[in-house]
Image (cartoon, rainbow, N blue to C red; front, side, top):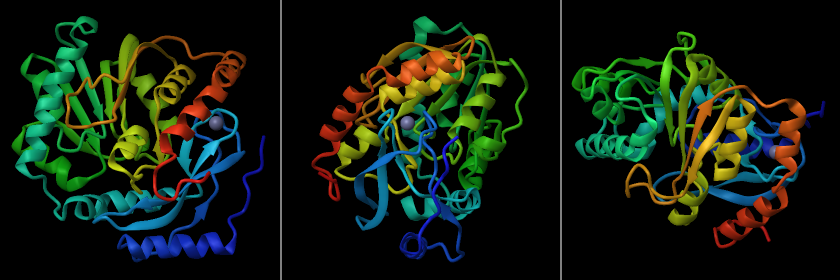
Length: 317
Ligand SMILES: [Zn+2]
């Protein structure tokens, strides 16, 4: 067991500055976290500043795990900050409104259509779909039209209510870590660009695995790392920056075997830099097998990540 180090005064001041900069009035505790993937606590600084909206940049450290190459914000705020932030500030900061624009919904519908096409050969004709971090849930509509039973979850009340009211979808306003789900129920769980936002990724994936039937599928779209590189800066709302390898490792840790892993844009062209992994539910790996998987290819992953972010503002040499 590694000791997580205490946050120092300078970090706390910087954290407070950041809260004010993104419009949050209350103070929240901030502490260094172990690696989401391998649990280790040895990190190297990767990028020193992130984009906080309207083109503004702010100091917020993004680090790379020296053991497995995972990229995440560190230190991080306590869970209450994320609850408050996603309830009150996220959409307003991002789009200046608490309800989605029509173009946003149309994009969700199209991405759902593309996803169905992309996964067609892997999916049953109909089944039960869970969309974690579904926002207004438009991605589920093409599935519902083909007879799928669908359920979405999202902590953002304004967007979730919009989907329930206007798209007639079943959406629960809840954070991913607090989802209450039936056991061994779903045939497909999708998490598209949302795993970057949750505060406890391991708890989220554990809940998803329990709610998936044996042989069921998990589809994860990661867009933070290469999406950030494509956008020219990392976004402050992404707690972690996923790659094909790190998504694959997290899946294997929680009981999914990756059966498709690609940077081909499976949900269409509107999210450049996306990476996609589809996994099939089975047994979680043993701790030994997982540790071996973490070591294998870690050096190559670190080199890939460092090369990818080298030209971002605030990148460390
Ligand atoms: Zn790690």
